[in-house]
Length: 340
Image 1: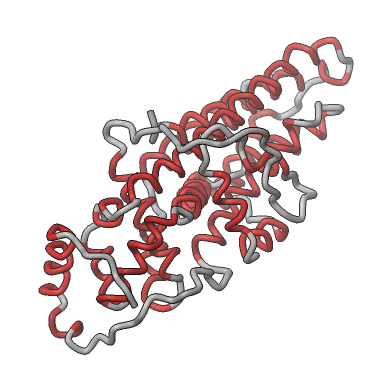
Image 2: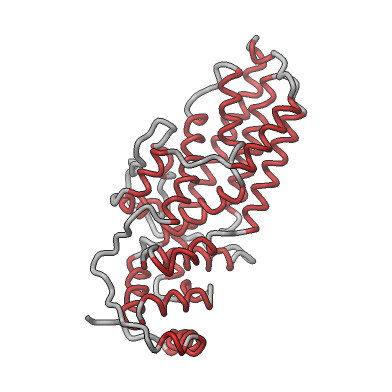
């Protein structure tokens, strides 16, 4: 097998890892890179990404369907406002990593080092230095691809928010929409309880992200200039399909925002784990690297504002504004903060 020549910096980083694990690493067996980069599913990243996909399927439902009655509003409120901030953040991180893992240069770099040192040693190296993965060949470009996908998602959330909030005004002429909400405080309290439990990934999205063909969707998600991949899914969808894009898609020009480098490092590290496979030693560090406090805190604040807004609502037509502003637009802002 032919390997790329590794730089002194690359060897230096792993020298630190080797020194820290000298006793166990002397027994490690060299494992050649697999010719097949596919990962058996379900794995931690696919399962988490399915939660994020389920949220976007709910977004699709409200994006393409106007509210016809108070039940429609309540359903949208439960689905979009019932997400757990930590779970949704892990799903967003997982999806970002899945997109980043499609970069061919980055995949080759990870496979080369795995073949030279062995998978176990590489996993320990990734754990010892979260910045390492993004420094590999293709690491920066891989993360930029994920930023491009995130930007498309954020734009979609803003557009959907505008559509939903517009109904807060247009529905004022509908008799049913002028009806009283009822015990708004109780609704807000229930919404808070639902957000603490979280909204489970749908079976359809779990199946989709476990399917071997998901990579063909993810590779397009990271190309600049294309629509969000979620445009083609809804609560009734059985699969995520590649958007119908006319014209050539370009390389993402998005850059990591100042102060958000640790998040970009985590995305690259998760992408490396995905390339290696989730079985055995890499499953636990995957779970740890998906945790991201800044975005989770931002989404949690958006949910608290949503609950306060609902508690203050008096008539049904007021609730769509709460949904659009806090369950859609602010969530979009939270996930887009990582890029500039």
